[in-house]
Amino acid sequence: MSTKRDLNFWFDQLPAILWAAFIFILSSMPASAFPHISFPGADKLVHLGLFFILAMLTERAFRRQALIPRLQSWSVVWAVGLSLLYGSFDEIHQIFVPSRSPDLTDVAADFVGALIFAFLYGPLFAPRKRTTV
Image (tube, rainbow, N blue to C red; front, side, top):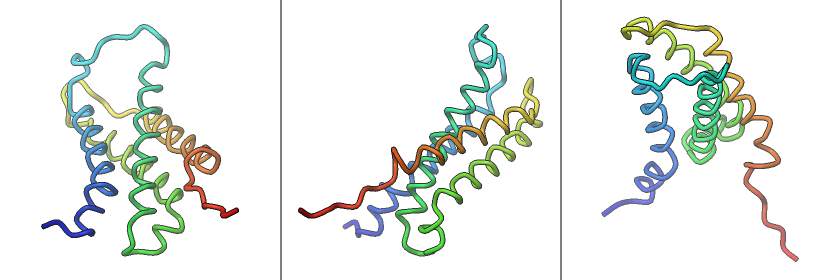
C-alpha cells in the first residue's frame, strides 16, 4: 500500500529527476545523432527550452517538498541555480562524449531558459490563492 509520502515523490519529485536524466541522455549522444538544422542558433533554442522545463519541474519539486522550508520559500531561486549548475556539469560531461565538446554559450542558453521561467513564474505559473466571495 502506498503512503501519501510515496505518492508525493512520484508526482512532485520524479518528473524533475526524469527530465534531468533525459537531458543527460541527450548530451551523451554523439552530435551526429541529431538532425542538422540550418536555422542559426537552433541548438541554443533547444538548450533554452530544455532548461526552461527543467527549471519549471525543479521549482515544482522544491515548492512541494516539506522537508526543507527554505527550498519551498525560495523555490524559484533554487530552481534557477540548480539549472545553471546542471547545465555547467552537462557541458563538462560532454568533454567525455565522442564528437561533443563543451560550449559556454550552451551554458548561457541553459541559464537564459531558466531565467525566462523565473520571470514568467509570477504571472503564469505561481500557484493562485483561492479567494472566497
